[in-house]
Length: 175
Image (cartoon, rainbow, N blue to C red; front, side):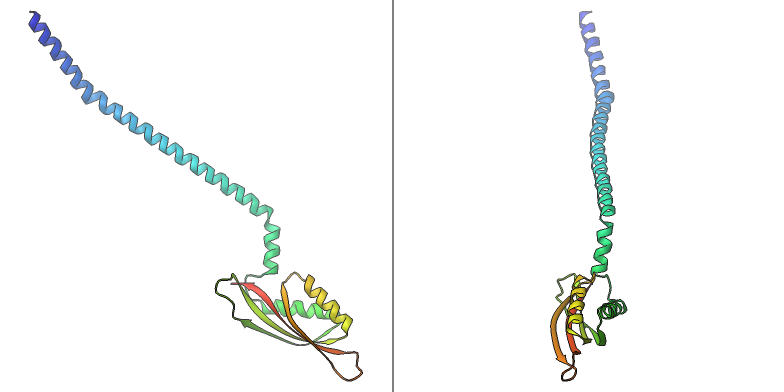
C-alpha cells in the first residue's frame, strides 16, 4: 500500500506540476508582459508630458516676444513691397525738406545661402546740405533697414544753395 500511496502522491504532484505549468506560468508571463507594457507606456506618457510642457513654454516665450517678432517683420518684411518702400522714402524726404526727383528700384542677385534678398535703390534728391544731413539721419533711424552704398553730390547751378544728391543703397526682404 505504501507503493500505491507513493504512486498516487507522485501522480498528484505531476498533475499539480502540469496545472502549474499550463495555467499559472502563462498567466505569470502575461502579467510580466503587461507590467513591461505598462512601464513602456508610462515612459511614453512622461515623454509626451515633457513635450507638451515644452510646447507650452515655447508658446509663452513666443507670446512674450510677439512684439519683437512684429518689429522684426517691419524691419525685414516677408515680401518685396515697392509701394511701401517708395512711400516711406518719399515721406522721409518731404519731412526733411528735400525734393525726391527720381527713384529707381531693382532686384539684386544675392547669395543662395542667405535668408534674405536685396532690393537696390537709386534715389535722386534736390535740397540743401543740412536737409540732406537730416534726411540721412532719419534714414538711419528708420525702422526699415536701408544700407547706403554711395552718395554723390553736385550743385544744380553755379552759386546755388540747392544741391542734387544721388544715393545708391540696398533694402532687404525675406525670401
